[in-house]
Image 1 (cartoon, rainbow, N blue to C red):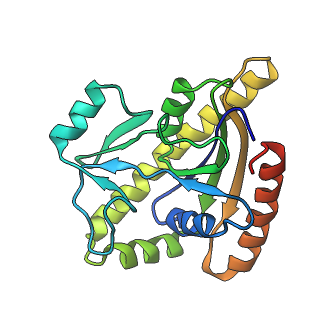
Image 2: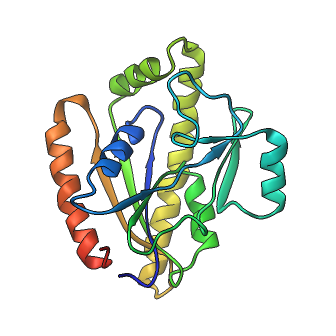
Length: 215
C-alpha cells in the first residue's frame, strides 16, 4: 500500500467527455480500485443529476462559510456559481482517487500539496469540436448557443494558461525542484474510437497500479 494518496485528475474542455471517462474508471474495480471525489457546488441541480453523486449541492452561504474554514483544496466561481473540491479527508491511500478538475484548479492543487503529500496524475481528455457541441446539447438540453460559444472561448484561454503552467513545472522538475505532479497523459475521446481509448486507459491503469502500489 502506498504511504501517500494518488490522485488522478481528469481535465478537459467543455463537452470533451470527462464524465464519461470518470464513469468508466469508477466501474472497473477489477483492474484497479478507485475512489471518486465528488465536488461541491452552489449551482442548481440539473434534471439528470443525482445529489451527492454528481455533486454535493449547497447554498452560497454554506459554500462561503466552507471557504472561510479553509476546507477546499481548490475552489472557484464560474458563471456565477461556486465549485470546490475537498481532498484531505476524502483521499484514500489504497485506491486510485479520481476527480474532474478545471484546468485553472490544477495550480491550486499543486500549491496546496507537495511531493510528500500526494502523487498527482493529470489526464487531459480531448475531443473534436463537433462531439463537444453534441455532448453539451445532449447533457443540458435547452442551451443558449451563445453560452456554448462563450464556454468554448473561455476554455481556449484557460488551456493556453494550463499548457504554459504544466511546461513550467516540467522545466522545474529537471532543475531538481520537487512537485506533486508525477505524470501527464492525453486521451482523445471521440465517438469513433471508444475501443482504442479504453485499451490505452486500461494499459496505463495497470502501470499506475504497480508503480504507486495501489492494492
